[in-house]
Length: 422
Ligand code: HEM
View (cartoon, rainbow, N blue to C red):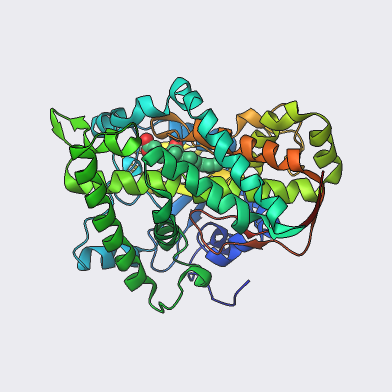
């Protein structure tokens, strides 16, 4: 962990876990604090300097309820939890505030979601399986090339999930390094490892958005002129209200799919593998019975919950879990906390690939904004898992895993392992 102080709190200090990037680097401690909050203040008031005041929603039932009641709890331009300064600076620099699917609401959201919905339906996603298999084979083969030790997160999970999402888009392999820099520039902006030579995170974010604009502008023009069988073609030629998507909306659509579909899934895989290596009996059970991979992937996603939270903005006076919430109040849905709720999951702090209740996970959210890529993510995690297990005989941790320092999307970014091949 770094020594960087988090935001200063003027309320129960435990509320710091939801917004302090450092605290997501030690998830054991994080979950101890979250369990305490669930027990005594499941809807916790958090007032932190530089942040909008909010209610942290920590129980499964309440996160479920807030997500379901999208008529009362709206997604807005500030749905991604962050300090005010991020938005103020974006506006001051002349960038439009984000308008992706997670930032819009109601009928407008439905119209935009409709543009890609068919692409992400289970039947369409099942068509992607041969491509996912081939990419997973390619990356699992790296285990052979790497000769017995590697960083399972950076050497396999990160490039694999990036290649899958870029294949869906239709972005050529040679542009992947750029895409990696861009997605990490947005989600990893708080993590010094991803800042490179840039000492000013806001300048870095601005640079990232500028490059995204240019790259996807060119991609759009190309797919309008030469339609192909990929998601970029669907977006470039998509219609809303009888016309093409606006330039800003289109840019943000690319950004949400590129960013939401990459780090999230690699964190789920990396963090899940960490648990398998810490529970070698489960790793062996999975090797002995590959049919367990599907449930194992579900448990890896529940356990890691890489999307840490979203903000919703309350439209009328209401109540959640017995707590009065006023019109205009902000609520934060804590997915990692909901996914360890002891009233829903048996022995929630135990990682268990045979857990019968793993499918009660709220890691993908719920309701109108339910993760568009959930089926893709599930397939990716279980496919890469199966392909890795097909190749290894033994695998062990070769050092302490390192967690990304970020409060919005985070998880294991370095997973050093040693292994023997079959
Ligand atoms: C394990 C991996 C993933 C996790 C944990 C995850 C989690 C989430 C969560 C929590 C939400 C918000 C749900 C809500 O507000 O109720 C979301 C939305 C979204 N996700 Fe994912 N996601 C993952 C992978 C993906 C992938 C692979 C893609 C794309 C291929 C994707 C695309 C999206 C999009 C576009 C939205 C916005 C949907 C909307 O607002 O209508 N996600 N995701």
